[in-house]
Amino acid sequence: MASSHDADTEGVTRRKSLAALAGAGALALAGCTQSTGDGGSGDGSDGDSLSGAINIAGSSTVFPLMSAVLEDFAEQHPGVDPNISSTGSGGGFSNYFCVGETDFNNASRGIQEEEEQLCADNDVEYVELIAATDALTIVVNPEADWIDSLTVEELATIWESDAVETWDEVRDEFPNEEINRFGAADTSGTYDYFIEAILGERGHTSDYQATENDNNIAQGVMGSEYAIGYFGFSYYFLNPDELKAPGIDDGNGPVEPSLETAASGEYTPLSRPLFTYPSIESLGEEHIAEFARYFVEQTTNEALVAEDVGYVPATEETQEEQMQILEDAIERAQG
Image (cartoon, rainbow, N blue to C red; front, side, top):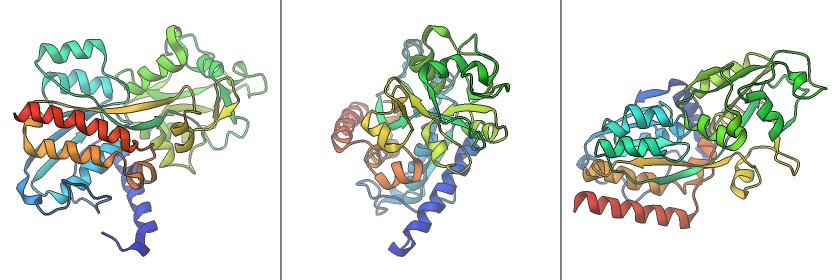
């Protein structure tokens, strides 16, 4: 661990590391960096007693948080082999978790009925754990000084299935320039949540650059003054000087995304819970059960969740509730 006078530098280094992880999208963690918090299962005293693979897929939004926690856990337990991929919530459920290929699936929305059925068909049982709170963020190019806010209705006209083509169709005073859109692929929980919160039955346009890699969205928006994109707040948090986040007006005036407005509920309708789903069968393995405990412990770690990653940490009450859910599942798996 770094000494106290190195704390600011350490935080910046950690944020740069997480930004690099976000860009990579898939990795086997190795050469891990410093720990960011203490946990009952993570003091390092029994690090060599735990060994085995931990395989995680799912949400690109949860990816930087899970990567950071997994990195710290692997540093404390060298026998653990951590592997994590950013596949999108739906891609993770359908291609990996619900067919028994991974131990956890991260999700930026709750598991859906068809995914529940797929898991049931393959005898995959799980529990739902809250990881953090996110402010789904709309981003534009920082050179776009003509836009500071959007109403929910204006946002819908940009992204609905029959979307407008130029900015002046959104608002008269906006420029007569083609809108360049960058957003989540349809296997993403962020895509699903955006439809639920903004579009409803209007559907989502197909006229956009779709990707599971949120860093690609950031790069696309950075490359055009007339671009717009959306993704989890963490990616804006990690690139604050390279992107601009307009306020969103849900009827009570524009509100910019931030840790504070997400925590207070003021940033509507785009604040949302984030989840991870451990497999109950996997929790029967001690190293996976210990990692799951460590993850829940870290959900209240403000330095990690808020300052390093850019999400709202869980409350102590929520953490206690989630830990009880997890302990019941571990007892079931190992009993």
